Amino acid sequence: MRRPLLKVNAHIHLPPNFSAFSTVDEALDQAEYEGVEILGASNYYDFTVYGPFAEKAAAKGIEPLFGMEIVCRIASLADQGIKINDPGNPGKMYICGKALTRYRNPPPRAAELLHTIRSGDEKRIRQMVDLLADVFQSAGIDVGLSAASIIDDVAQRFSVDACTVVLQERHVAQAFQEALFSAVPMGSRSEQMTALFGSTSQTDPSDAVAVQADIRTNLMKAGRPAFVEENFVTFEEASELITELGGIVCYPVLADGMNPMSEFEADPINLGHRLMDLGITAAEFIPNRNKALVLTEYVKVLDGMGFSLSAGTEHNTTEKLAILPTCRGGESIPEVARRLFVHGALRQLKHQNAVAIEG
Image (cartoon, rainbow, N blue to C red):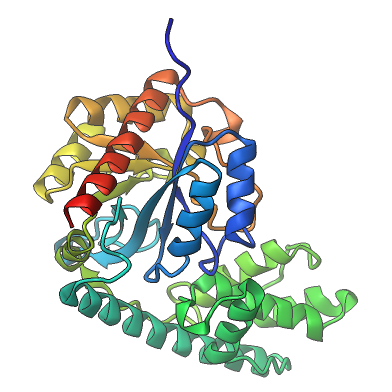
């Protein structure tokens, strides 16, 4: 008789990253309630939260995985106009580091790369906040926001040190949405949003999350008034950082989570060869973006090519999802994929434990 499959999720975001969870305890309480036995975090650029995450996970009998997410750029693909796993930007690649073992005290080269990434990211976000404030001011709304004030608010909201906060576009959009709701009464909000966006807004003016999405789409994306070009590290630098932190370089697959599929991912066999050419041997899915049939096709092909596979949910919006991953529309993940995702999470855990002991 087969043993029941372990319940795993290898990719969520924890606060102060933008997250569906208000605290580490909330994430772990939900994981415990759903019977999750391995839970992985994949935060951006600061790992201070992993200390309490590890301690509290151990107290609940949950095995923690420590990861990270990085945004990088492959110039040759950008020059050809080839999209990878970002719907809007050719050459832009999200890449993950799994099973990090040296995140507590990063080696000098890792610390240097982290500083380069964070300083470039912080400069860009400061510029975006200032541009957004100008747009709001032009529409008659004095928000009084700065990057520093938003960081302080996030730090207070999650009871963390401000130096551990890595501001993301979602944090910024949320801050401006809250300022809009505070300054403009409901009856005038649609008219004010039309003035802000330069076109008639069809969004429910009481829906905070929808208004945040509108702020990002209409004001912060490429070609919009508060857009600032990203400062990308190269794929080689991102891969080096993950390796320096003792982790596994892992590619997050969008597949049909991007419509139309990107040229980079459109054929699973070609995708596998592209990843092998980059030296990548692991891939990860966020199945709630994928139809079950498509997920199964990609999983079978990549497994047959020798890739280690894992899956998660991200939880990088305020949407309250289950921690156990499902496919798009709540469809169950096919068993063949579930087994491979469990195997992949166990391989990450084995790597994490083995390298930590060696180091």
